[in-house]
Image (cartoon, rainbow, N blue to C red; front, side, top):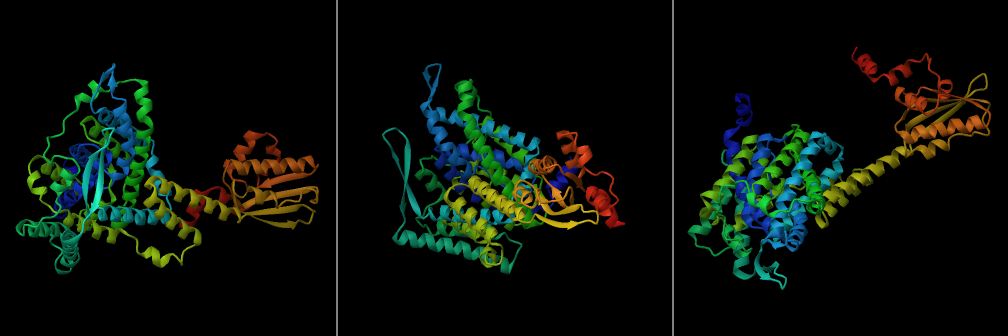
Length: 550
């Protein structure tokens, strides 16, 4: 226990102040999450507290901030609406049935995420190329910027004929707009200027407090956290301590139809949540020059969502905007995330009236500065200096993140990168041909042999024109997959059908085993006893490493 406390409390002052700052910046995004998903803001705030606390304590990346994120919210919108229309239990109408389906979906989402961590799927994030990472960061920065621009408007609620609440944004104008711009600019000025004077005071928190003081004591009529919640149909921040929601089990029909209904939403939410969390973890790794544990983060995210669903909260994941604010404010340890969650709970339970007075302009200013610091401005400089394919991936991922979805953007980027890699390596297969004194023709294969280079490999051989004795030497090639094994087997069959003798040399041990399993004839085709130091070094990487160190 002592060791755990030492790990948590490493940089208490900075972590505590960073946690408080992040909790203030968390509120408008979490409330916006609730409006998007059409649920009570307190449900989203409860989920943010639970997920934030559990992932801070048990997650694989100290300094990463998790909560109820908009990337997950959009997945739940249709499911909640459909759930309301399915609101029957034993032929008895149940009010707000979509909410109970939401909680069940969040629990299942968490189970899927825990399973991903148990089966070590977190390591897959290491396969994401750097251009995809840069595109993800740029795209998300643009998305966050656009979300803040929408704050320069009022929300007006209307109820459609089907009873669904709809919100319309009416842009600010005149004095109201100029006041908002002035307060945002003042907040940004403090965040930019204060670190040049002293780093002992957290710039973002100071800016929020200073702007709030100006609004309160100057009696400015501007949009605040409280008015923002009321405009969206909420009743305020005041809530209760989250407790297990027994109504979920009383009102939710436990049958295969329910499972079939919530499974697609749970799987998609789990995937998006893990991708955003692990990508954010990678970003923190780069910013702090340390290394997180992806599998542990998957399990912690899943546990947080399971508990949140059981306690009546909504689902969430790692939040890049709040995480960057935390890192920039000096938050590096687990204490910053714990403090964020506890401060958020304190706001809900005791200080709701004070937090509701914080002007939205102060929080928008903090987020604008975060966007400026998050966006990879170097990408403009390097676009002409990196390979065209990498530049294309960077731009495509940024665009898809903005116009579609984060998960789709990452998948598209990885697929494009993989196809480019396969194409480039497919063109690297070479065959150097020579004749031995006894008339045997040697094909020395250079480059990787895999599914992408199989066609080029087959084109290298002149079966009909070759002499009666042929050797294929793989010492400068790497046989990578089953397609390569099939290509080798096919070439051998062609030479044998032509009545010619063919031998294979310098195949890796794994390749030989696969060929022996395919057909016993390869025991006669493959040359085992080779007196060539290059072969032994290539076949035994450990021996090769020892040779270097010796």
